[in-house]
Amino acid sequence: MPSEHAPAPPPHVPAAETPTAVARRVLMTESTALATLSDALPDDFDSVTARLLEVSGRVIVSGMGKSGHVAGKIAATLASTGTPAQTVHPGEASHGDLGMITRADAVILISNSGETRELADMIAHCARFAIPLVAMTKRAGSTLAKAADHVLLLPDAPEACAIGMAPTTSTTMAMALGDALAVALMQHRGFDRESFAAFHPGGTLGAQLLRVSAVMHTGEALPLVTDHTPMSDVLLTMSSKGFGVAALVEGERLTGIITDGDLRRNMAGLMDRRAGEVATRAPMTTRPDTLLTEALGIMNMNKRTVLPVVDDGDRLVGLLHIHDALRAGVA
Image (tube, rainbow, N blue to C red; front, side, top):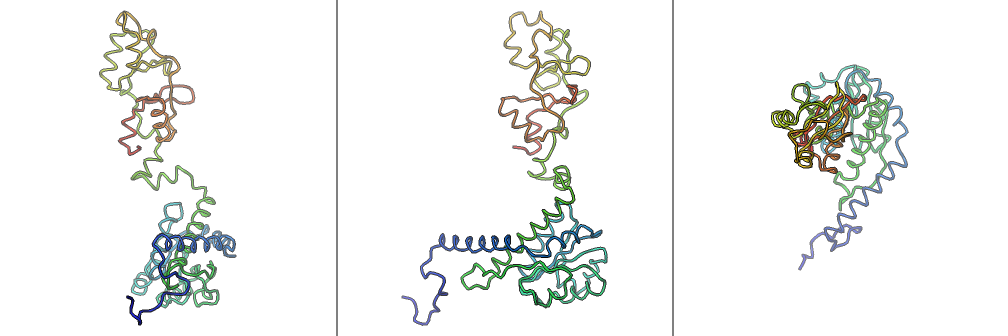
């Protein structure tokens, strides 16, 4: 039996709430707060975006405790979408790292209460060197908000935890607002797929943004034959190049392809024929600037292991093998 001295649960939390019910309540609380934030977007949002677009240095994002973790995520998102950014820890800032913050920068400080004492030195540094300061806080009359050039005011929404104190809803709103700011800056900078790929060369994300031109085979590696090439020579070309196909060209223009299937369909008298008599005309192709993921989808859908790569004039510029896509990390 529970002790008669055991503290009672908060009145708004059912005593026997299941974990699933807790999860649903938390998600509903936070989603309601996000909807409120969307309906009441901070008045300074446009001016903050415009100010950050003018920054020639970096956007410095900082906060203490959980707000510091949110600051790290916001800085990383900004940096990966075209806005140079970094975090500076408030404690380390007071011991020399203020030197990382220059007049060319702008600073975003995150504090739910706006009274986080560890931010005082950073606030003073911004005032001293006329560095633009953006406050992200829930308290419009707080010390941080009064000192800032711009205020991204968060709605006064309840935390999702049972005691209403652990940073949950507040950090979710701050992170979401940071995402909104990063995307707005990204769009106004014209940051596109190519830019994104340049900043994400590694891992699955980078592989998904690779173009066919990055992995296709070119030049001497291509198994080229003409209409008049004897099939005996075609077989040697197919074998030596290792693709299992031969590309039929007229000058530089692709006119057909010979695959293992074409060989099987023409076994009778094969060695007495020329390449043009065996080849499949108007083969399936792709372009050099096609995303590697899209090219792999074409190959899977049509049961192809090789795709000729042609330019706008149907000139053969490369050959893509399915293994090239897989080795690049596209699956």
